[in-house]
Length: 264
Length: 313
Image (cartoon, rainbow over all chains, first blue to last red; front, side, top):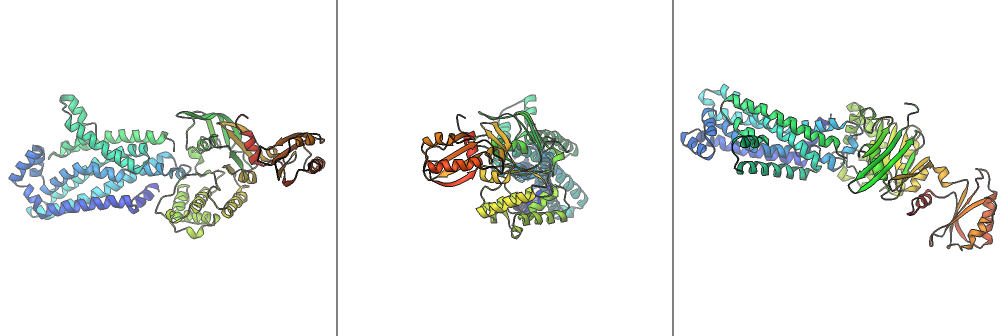
């Protein structure tokens, strides 16, 4: 009941609509560029050289070995998924706590139901948005590369990419359950979520760490999984998907502890 | 659950960073006539009410509501709360919001809509059903908040400042509503408006500086059968104390502070029918040339609370 209400409210609220419009417009623009020739150009050896120079060989290999449209979509999406997921899930319990609307709810349902429904509501919102973007990316890939007689492979990889991105969004949704319960304000939640993530990601990429420390540090936030999602082989990508689960479990646990024990 | 206190606290305490807001409160409240919770600013009234509602956790001691910790699953739908400062969701019509709350209490979707319409009718806001909170005044939102506390059939209703922000006519309607429903459930009403508490409640709990200073029946506290309070045209002379104390059965005479133009005369309880002492007191006042504007049996609860919570008492 609360999830249904939460989703309906999100989809009709300025914040929810803003997220959907921003998300939809961004991907519409990217897909129009990919369909307009970028994807074909990315598949050429010259582009592969530039990509491997700018990024790394694995990404160049991904674009070469997989349908270029979907590969490019995956590269852009994994970079921007934290941003979109933070935007979509920054509210959760923040508005309930900030406006004290929760005081109307807790005489009727437990805190666990409220926390879970807000978490699931946010997860469904970003999940559905990712699903629609994945379907659109697959359709664009079919239009661009479908004539090459590999429609089945494109659809299969499109489904994989969509699944990867949905799973990759979930640790961020879980992280925002912790941030929103701690901040009790949607604005602060967004600021701390975005600011904290960018700051941590930037720090981890700039601080010169080596060896085991570097490996451990790269997994402090879920972006440490990103290189594995961008490998052309299925195995590392699946391992990265499985790797999201500990993040989800940890962040949800911490978020629940904050929400469970805080005054309302 | 017969015989179980509606509220029971033992050694209840709550600290904030630099302040002890509640200090070892032991209290047992029984079901029945509405119970008022009063006290001056900073007395701990809001903190105590919030702990009873489960909004704040106690630092020490225990609190039970209908035999369970506040907000226990067994209490869902049995205890209703009017929070003072909670907001409704912006942009969603109030009928839908009330129906959603009713659904959370276990009503089916159709029954929830009917129940929401019923409680809107109770607070005389049936016309506002399709309006969103931003289209309603503060007073109307207060009435919607009161309406949500009457969804279903709660056994205990905790109301925080139910008439604050309401115009006198609407406040009167809300008090009538509470009176009309107080036979079916127990109300605990926290308020600064002591006249409302005196009108509505059978028992009052007075808090001051984090402690309970009184828990008694309102009628006993204001002394309707053993005290007369006078509002005078001018501050009375000091000599009036001796003159009134000389009247048989008079036990104590209280003068208001300078400028209050008030006088309270306490005497041995004459019961509801007795009035000999009261007549003698009136005669003594007339003989002393003290002009009065108004006479009330007993003291007002407001005067009593001010007296009991005055610094240094």
